Image (cartoon, rainbow, N blue to C red; front, side):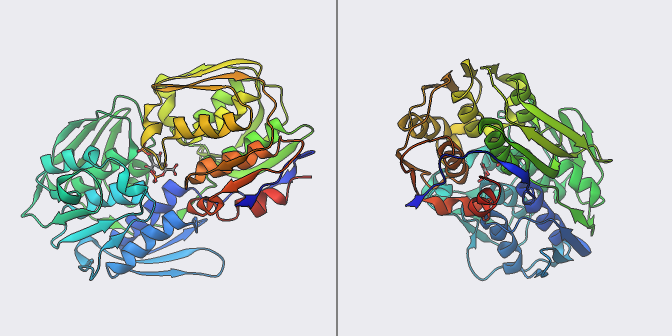
Length: 427
Ligand SMILES: O=C(O)C1=C[C@@H](OP(=O)(O)O)[C@@H](O)[C@H](O)C1
Ligand SMILES: C=C(OP(=O)(O)O)C(=O)O
């Protein structure tokens, strides 16, 4: 149990948010399968990305971590990777397991991928079904769709044309990475646009990939060329500090260089619709911005549909903001939350309601009525990093008593310095 910070007077100053998790994973993957040496600056040194890094080390790739936090990857090309001597451990990371299932399906050696208890309960048919259509030999534990995953070498993969049944960047990326080693042109049609880091970064590594809004195509057999990657701050991590500064009175917080790729920036739009003061000063790439946030009086809102994939990981912290907003907030079309590290609809409602919130779970989201004062309670992250961080921000609003968090170490999955960074800006 960790005793959380409570009763915050104000939040002031500037905070450097750690690197984007989605981009950090992909920077290691693409640099490892590229020819030549790539330097990654702003890399996220957190458990999920370390799982990805260790997997490529086990495949024979030299990866150096420098003292200034940057990472040098000595790429070997896809054909240069070696068969590992042990099972590859994706830890808690869905991104690692699903993207690499696609990449490894075209490899000439057999592999086993394992994960922790949470990852071993997350659905893998969403990648195994299209990968089998491409000719992959991939199966889950004892005929199930769950990890450990077993991949056997096949003669070759064939490209497919695939209509995505679910909005998921992990599924899209898995198929694209299998498409790299497949014969023919892989074509994907998305119903709702999911984060496009894979498409942008493959292009940066020299891959010819065509993107026409929700239609993507990539020809197999292409090689990657080393490229340096500058990872911006993670909007999904910044989200906790944004909401903290909005909800704690008399606050003003600046966060430099936060990634605001349009396929990830839905939280800014939703919070602004709720009345949030958030200033965005974009840099020249148009994909990241310096953010300034001030305490704001919020009102309830409704959202669903296409915006959901652009803020999927931020829904627990948006739900907390909604508990402090005037009126009702309705979140729809977010059923994907049920298959994250926890069922984030159920756990968000259960844990915040313990503190006095009024959240009703629905099949595909939540109905939240505010504002409700939050009171002390013992709460639990259930091993989910985003739930743990959201509950610490909730605790800042508790005026009396102690809030204890079970399984607080979960924050190490995406944001190891979270508690220390927060303490440095809270009065
Ligand atoms: O591709 C990625 O880096 C991610 C995609 C999303 O998952 P889904 O593809 O399952 O929606 C997101 O929730 C996850 O945190 C990271
Ligand atoms: C869902 C998440 O990650 P992953 O799917 O990679 O485990 C997350 O970080 O919120």
